[in-house]
Amino acid sequence: MSTRGDTGPQLLASPEELDRHARELGAAISADHPDGVTLVGVLKGSVVFLSDLARHLTVPARFELVAVAPYDGAAGRTRVVKDLDRSVEGEHLVLVTGIVDTGLTADFLLRHLADRQAASVRVCTLADKRARRILPLAIDYAAIEAPDAFLLGYGLDYAGRYRNLRGLWTADAAALADDPDRYVAQLHGPT
Ligand code: IMP
Ligand code: MG
Image (tube, rainbow, N blue to C red):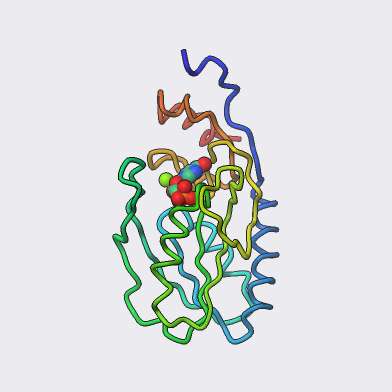
């Protein structure tokens, strides 16, 4: 069975470590954007990180949210399902994403934002799974250099589960495919 080797989820970053990363990236983004910044969060995986990151900024910040339909491997394309709802012309944007894996989603969104006459566009990710990159992508701010493993928690999901975990975990993707709820009791249970 595909799940035989499953050793269970492993903690990759504790809530305390994640808070430290949010604080450090908040300071870096503030230093780079002294006149303020517009955080463009990618739904839904970025929202927990975005919330913590934003509260560590020392400059004024606006929030915008975008959503894309997950790309279809076969068709090789994605599409915007929730777009910016106002002009961001002249603003300094930071695209905030939960994870950059192949880079297809972030690359698509950067192209999508490119014709909005923003003053600048930078990229901030909670997790950078660099080993999986298909498209070269300049990431300006990354909290976690992630291993080539499936990540859960702190906004990241498997089939909608696990987003509200306070830590970031690695888990066995084959075991989750077998049963998406496999780790619910373990990870959400009393600690
Ligand atoms: P991309 O391959 O960089 O385009 O990433 C596509 C999307 O896949 C991400 O925005 C996530 O929603 C999802 N994803 C990729 N890797 C993981 C993971 O390890 N955990 C949870 N979601 C992931
Ligand atoms: Mg997801």
